[in-house]
Length: 191
Image 1 (cartoon, one colour):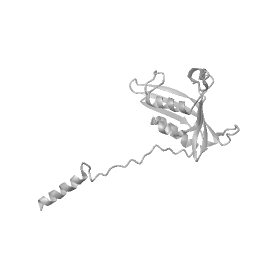
Image 2: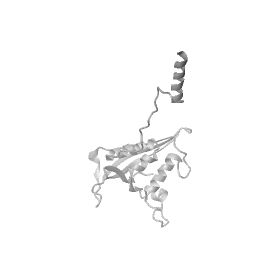
Image 3: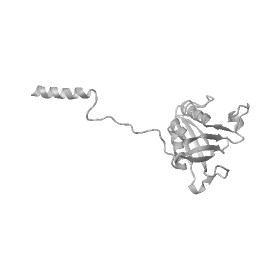
Image 4: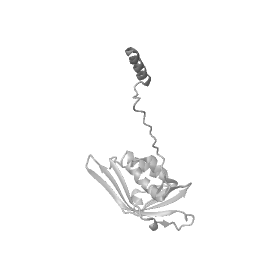
């Protein structure tokens, strides 16, 4: 009888292989789908994308017609020639923004002066909804404009240092298909 129990136990263990029958597999139910149900939720997800260095979340926050707009005093230094005329423009589009942000998350600065930051934190001071604006431009009547003070902090553990940029940004958000997205990110800070 003892041998039969031993064989039955061995058969049960053999049928499970190396798996522990008392600890079932964990199922990962997470996904990279972000909810952008409100303008504030979009901006909170923007902070999250930077904190997690998650380019997939970041891309979902931007409208396909997205533009990043610089102050006129900055575009001669960091602008990109978007129209092929040999001059730096005061804006860039979706593809350039995604590429630059991916580089910041994964490679560091494009000129090699900064390595990949160990920690990236974007802090937005989102004002109360009563301070949000409607865009007065024709065709933009349903766009929400949210001015935010921001701090962007890149921290480097090896050198025990950080790089901080701060100022004001105006986020223009538009709702399509029940979700909000950033269509314009206007940097109003000085370098």
